[in-house]
Length: 399
Image 1 (cartoon, one colour):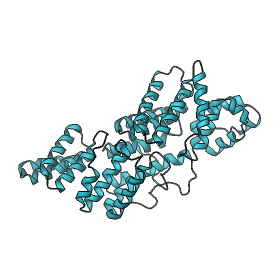
Image 2 (image 1 turned 120 degrees about the horizontal axis):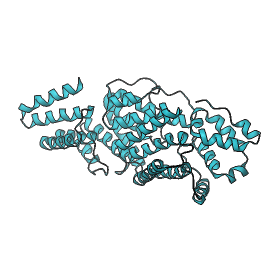
Image 3 (image 1 turned 180 degrees about the horizontal axis):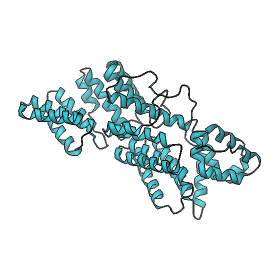
């Protein structure tokens, strides 16, 4: 959606009209023309911003999109939060602004469970709001942040739901965020084991523009580039030039790049070197990749797979020694079954697979892996009469 420049409004002193435009289209403008948005804010009188905390906060957000890893200045946030609390009937969009900023701060501190609690509060505000002014612009990006919070806390299906709701609302409103939401939806579907749904969700160009300046759109796009590359890997396709995101280290989905690197090394790279690199990253980022973090679970599983692929069975076991504090997934249970098989424990492998199949009775790609592991375990146990049935099931699911 194209928007007229707000700079003439500011220069003509029509700040009430400027405020109305911000209320209606701030996040859409931040995606489509962040430079013009910042240029307008740069000329807004400081005294007016001080008297209008909603727009003081909006300016801080607009500047923050250039530095996504840097939190909003505490003084600005406190001023805004106190102003919202002082209102007799605060607008729902302002309440959401306070809660979403808190959720991001908790997420950045690695406090994923607390971030998830705040996400639930945000959902309650959205569902119960009577004053929905500005929702067409605000809600899609809020739901994306909610989805990221749910994903990092291990609620993969909740994340898919939040991203799906964001896409639906954005599509109805004609919001510029529509193609970017698909990137996050695709990533969540991948971790749910549904590669086909991930592929259908992704609508972004899979290659990132070279030397793109920092912006909200660039942050969203980089996550999409990582998701597209992972989809190709899951489909057995070789990497293509330019597919690696230039830098995700400054955003909540930074771990997608590390997951991608590990997956590439497993298939076509140097698994020994990749394991050493990933081990270093996990030690360095321990506060962000602990047992309470879905990112931590994924990356520790990647490290175990790298060790397993090089025959380092004891190291693979050691990585998974501490049980994660998020619900097990098909992927994690399949890995534990593989380690049990490699360690000469086919009965344990079979028990793990049976547990996984009872938890996740679906026909996604990971379910095929589980059934093949079941066949291998049964064969190792001498139960060849049931092996063919498991292999036929796997073949039917694939074709």
